[in-house]
Length: 348
Image 1: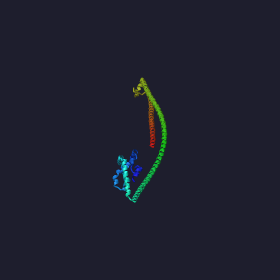
Image 2: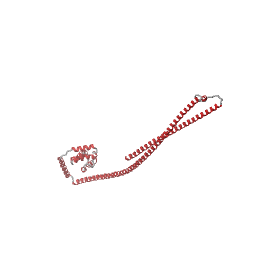
Image 3: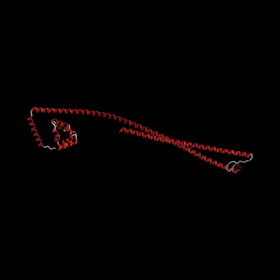
Image 4: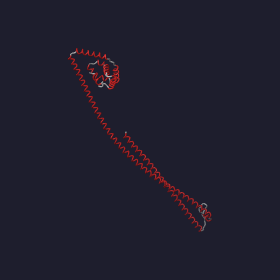
């Protein structure tokens, strides 16, 4: 009534798996007798509870309460230790067998056959009902397990479909990223070429401006040298004129040592006219020299202004070249970072 399910299923029907694993290990090591040792150990540990119940209560105890007791690993370990320590000899078993047979014969002689059959019939009906109930429970568990497995299978299929879609999207993103990378590489190549051209143009412009500045500097130096020569020539001419004036008695009377005209109260017309002519001539020469000096100074100022303007343009050109270099470098770095970041995200 209670032990058949233990022996047929090796205690897997009601008891936890960690206890069943221990039993199977002992079965493989010691042999079939281990099953009887475990069954006797279960009966021995349940002796007090079994003696307090009737037959129906004992069956319910074996079916419900006994498996719950060994959900704890500690109790299962104690049970295994008790089963391994139990030693039953063949003589003792034969003695129990003889006593059982004698007891059965005595009960069969004392009981009425009708009552015995009725009791046996009730026992068989109860066993049948119990087996049917267990069959229904097992069928219910089977159906529940099938439903759960089907649900898990559906969830797994949905998850697989979602993963396949995600995989396709990832592949498409990867292809797009590769196209974007190629486009960015082409743009970077074009930017490099454009920057190289701009740099070449800037270098040519710088060289041109440098040559122009050099020409202007050369012109300015030539003008400065010419001005110095003219000034030295004027000084030489003035010194010669002064020497001539000092060597002439009439001129010495008209001019002082500093070169200024002396005021004389002569009344001679010839001397006045001569003085006026000399005076006007000297004034004209002095005016021409001043005019030539002013023109030279004006040219020098214009040359300096042009030099400053060229230096300003040269600074702007250098700034533009540096800005173009920085902009190209930053764009290249940002494009590489963008391409690398997109590719890293898609890869992850």
